Image 1 (tube, rainbow over the protein chains, first blue to last red):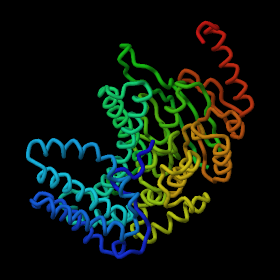
Image 2 (image 1 turned 120 degrees about the horizontal axis):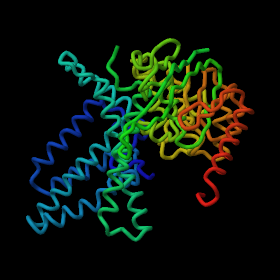
Image 3 (image 1 turned 90 degrees about the vertical axis):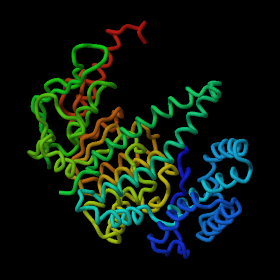
Image 4 (image 1 turned 30 degrees about the vertical axis):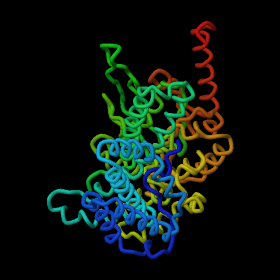
Length: 207
Length: 243
């Protein structure tokens, strides 16, 4: 299993300005980048925002290698999207869309690389707190985010393993040999995770 | 020492191949109060089902299971607070990216303050000599280290009973020895299934499970001998052509 650090960078301990920034500010940055990806119409602005985020990532001491590991699984998908959009809408639009996706991924990675998961979960619990009166369970929200952070890299890693197995059997061009095992493994992972959480009494309503 | 009681416990599941339910455990009666209880048997004999009943992960079709008098169906939340469960594959058990975060996850319910929780997680990891691995990704740990981190996450909430489902199956000799030493130093009551007969010999009491029934219940040496005998009988019945 090679799922470690795919798509979202793992936490890197440090004392940088970004590490010390309030969680709400980092949340706002990710939210703002997500929003901006719909608003920005010029690929040069997208490029500048991406460069700024990469700069912040390096400033945090997380390193280019970690960033590359996080975005590498997206490369093939971005290439396909980019080529399709180029063919349909031209080069500037294709560049803007690809750069905007990268902006979102790098912003999210900046958050996860500079914030310990437990601090992130505490932040979610605090943010969901006011909705308690409507029946929301903040701890369950936090647990869901935690599991999502763990599951995305796991499934990405599963895909890499399955692709190697398919290659070894000469089936790398057979989509069924790739998709079906990933699907089955993901369902099995979900079941195992559910069982592990139940065994530990996690995710149950508060007493 | 806690007492785990099985009273006429049967577990049966529906299958696609047969109109009759498949019986995984058949009318099992047990009272487990020894400090170390081993469970051995062939693959598919019902060992895992027996262990999962103790934590309430599996519910009996008939009969009752209780831990210190608490029914594992009616009082499942209380039972799970008292019974820790360690799975064969630690990767399916560890749900956070690093050991420290996973232990902290275990403690979220009992300790609300983040700093206190962090300190308690460090203490739990330190107890098993794992503090140096606290911030490493679980993917970077060896199989044995992962299994010990999973164990630390379970022990952090101080359960009275520790159930382990074949914890050494995926481990090499060195890591198996590391796990064995760690388990021997624990105060909890341990109920553990294993294919490692050397490990089974260190238990106070060993159950041999065969086709959903307790085929032998007694001292470790006699149990291992009974299990070997069962295996030999099975091979002779099948004959060489079936191997």
